[in-house]
Image 1 (tube, rainbow, N blue to C red):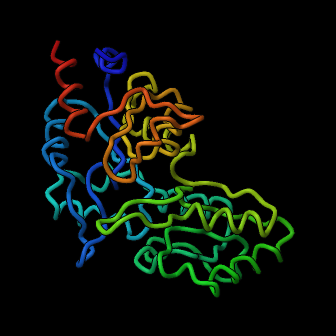
Image 2 (image 1 turned 90 degrees about the horizontal axis):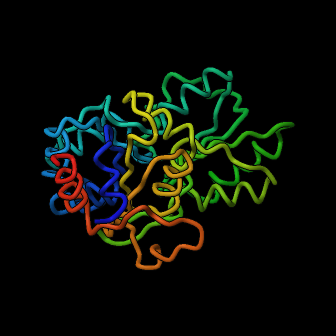
Length: 272
């Protein structure tokens, strides 16, 4: 029996990535498709009594719309169970009195309705898809380079993600471009930041050694969780590539075919 499975006997809470673990985004109508066995796996987790939070860097829709889409696919989840970067970004902007220039997906813009966007004194990057145009990125560059203390927020730092028709560039690629151009370091809101994972644990009232993260990103899901003392599994779905199992810096606590397999093993251990 793998070490991670034996440690599962003291488990109180689970953190699940969404894209690539529960479903693959994209498709003709943008609904995406559930990964085989994942809807039932989530149902079984909830029946087990384990605390559960969904940790996502999803920034192509408001949290409300995103949850509604997952519910349409059959997932039992509520908005309060989803930890996402945009609401956290809004709180930071308001606390620090910052006015952002947004380079985000059109569908995410309503998430920032409560924030003053006049006379921008910082830039917020999300997964903007087609809004990652030269014009928008150059405008972000001009704002940052013109500030005495430039502030760049990035809603995640992923390199790529998987949709139903293949891999797509993620926000981290464009974050790196602006970091290089402006000679600055972005403040990452979302995975793999420690604050993001710790906020999810606090929401469940669970200690790091009592939690397990399951994701498809070896660096942002697995590495991000492990730096907080949280065990982490890598699923071989979503963006997973065989080379991830030989990553030079991050080694998962365990590797599973999919979420359904992980849940089978976890629940078996918890019942002993």
